[in-house]
Length: 185
Image (cartoon, rainbow, N blue to C red; front, side, top):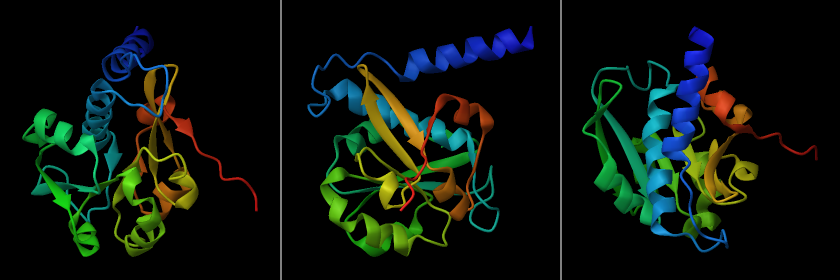
């Protein structure tokens, strides 16, 4: 019975947050796509754990930074609840690269692809969940990539990058994700 309930909850999660996008060309994203991606960011917070040295669940602020020009930022501001998992949420638009140090989750816009390696290196020991919808983000060391497949928003996770950032990901979330495997060099 509980197994069936779990499968139903996964199906509901997918239906709610992987809605039909309605765009034939994945490079031409429509507003619904950005709202769904913003909703995924909200959900990730519930299914990941940061080290207590970085942030303690149910205490303080959880800061989500948005670096670069992205419609996802506006959607985050419009759909983000005031609290998730006991944290008060704060969304900041980042203009200076040093501001990324103050975040717990960082969405990197594809417009800033040239800065990804520098930012990821800067965050190396800080347990910041890095997320982007850039096709090459995981190869550059990012943790979560959002992408559109068959007109639905999906996500891919680099377990290696998450482990390096000391961020633990719930098995429930991993079951829904595509797992990134780095190509041997």
